[in-house]
Length: 324
Image (cartoon, rainbow, N blue to C red):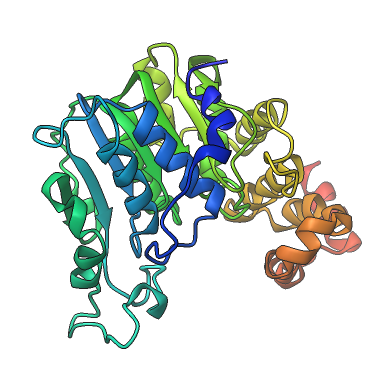
């Protein structure tokens, strides 16, 4: 077990403030962020949170860094990236605003975020806006820590891959907060591609998968990930490799083998193979967790399958005859 995995035994010792800023992370994920900051990170390389949202996860991580015996607040920095505004494409809601406050003219809640994180502003560096615009393509400095809660689309994940994952080194810690999201299969198959070079800390912490880089990652591996250079079948194989490593989350509530199987269906869906996607998803309707939490996913895949033009038997025969 890596040092990262040893943090699981410390969950019960963590007492976070009751008035943390709003977050969609569970209490377990917040505790783990605190523990990573308190016991694992040094601040010698970049500490990055991609998708800070309302600030709850940022606060937990920053509190851990603040209480760390090795993190130097004069030189270390926590980099927080987000749109920091509500609106289409931001995945932010009005809950990210302070009670009784309205968003600024540009729908920004950045001032609210700064108020919530006030104790840690001296070592917090905020990057507000579209990640493609706020991240530096020329920055190749090593990243010590990545909390990824922003890769809701393949476009954003490409940016995450090109500008952050390529800066991983042995010792880098990555937390994929959306790993329980079947609609985000790029998180799953990219992790499969990295398996020879990482060690998974343990069972996912609710929806978060944590891993530590243990070996240098070859450039050609990162190139294929950043360019999404895998066939559908290759992506399925990579996801299967992850399924062999993880089962349920640490509380036993999320069946990741089933979640990742549905992720395979979305790999097909995004490739336009709707019949194949539904053939994978349909049997998963018997999974209690998926049927309860992902009904809209099933509906999306079924609708795409039913809207696809059907090839009749006669059409198939004509096609075969035409080939002779």
